[in-house]
Length: 422
Image (cartoon, rainbow, N blue to C red; front, side):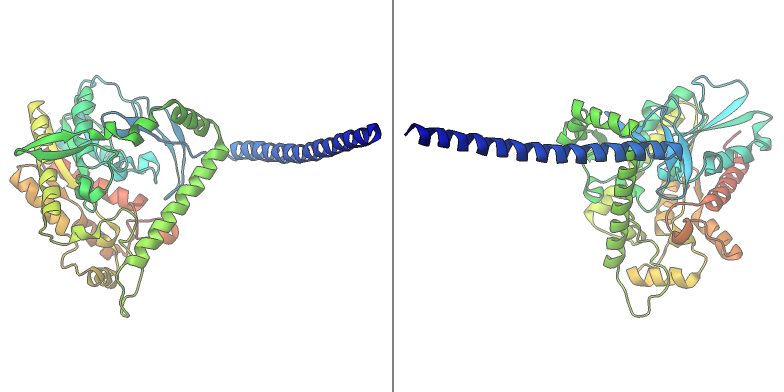
């Protein structure tokens, strides 16, 4: 009996020893895997720093604007075009500017979205910088210097641009406020129903009055982004080039998938040839069509109301307010057959319909307007030039260096000859 107990006890010990041995082997293997991953990640981190790779998070949450540019952040931008981006200490994609306006200086504040922020080109190539350079010799300045300050942030609609004007622009005492309108999506950006996001502020008409809807601050998404874990993740992203590379690849993949989905959803015919222009993610091709439904009518009404509010604020501060409408790739594509294919595909009768709408709004509100797209098309056709896009996506997307240059020259010419700077 005692021998049987001893044998059972010994068997139990042997079984336990085997389990411990297997566990140690598994842990050792896991340890080697973790060690290999850490060594590989460390080597990748060092390599990315040696080659100068960076893809920082340029934006931060903002309790008034939804999000804004992060002060003092810098790094490479490669999503469309390539440039090294620096955000100044006040959260502007611009050089440093003093809050107090220098003597004998005329200041122009530019409000806009990704066309004004323009991370896809170097800063000295952006249209407002080109305009600043060209305005230096404007005789209407009477010998004064011109200083342009950029308040553009990617993705902003007129609502966020108005809040930027109201809360931040006046600190710099501008003499002129220039609102740069992206005609294809600024209207939809001003409508929750069309933009389909709850993460930003909107303006709505309540009892006939334009009122701020900032309920985004109460959403779980916004509150989560303010939490300690979210701030820790942001800190890790700021300090790890490998994480930045992963984020860059992830965003590029999502953008590619969205573009592919947009192109596959676009109407096609056997006669359709040429690039599928105008089908970029975020583009609302419906804006080229005259639509008479409550949602679109409200979006246009809110947009016009915000332009009137901006005009009134500028007037109350003895500043001039000017609207400039930009262009979209398909509007200024140099090949008329490609433009015709696009209009046929979507049943569009006038590619400049949104530009004409903004022109009429400005006429009703007594706001000077610079309408660029038809003039840029004229340049593109005469010179067989592509003003939008980079590399294999030429003709599509944002202005390239040439597009910014021609737009900046036209804006400077109109501001100078139009008497705005007197």
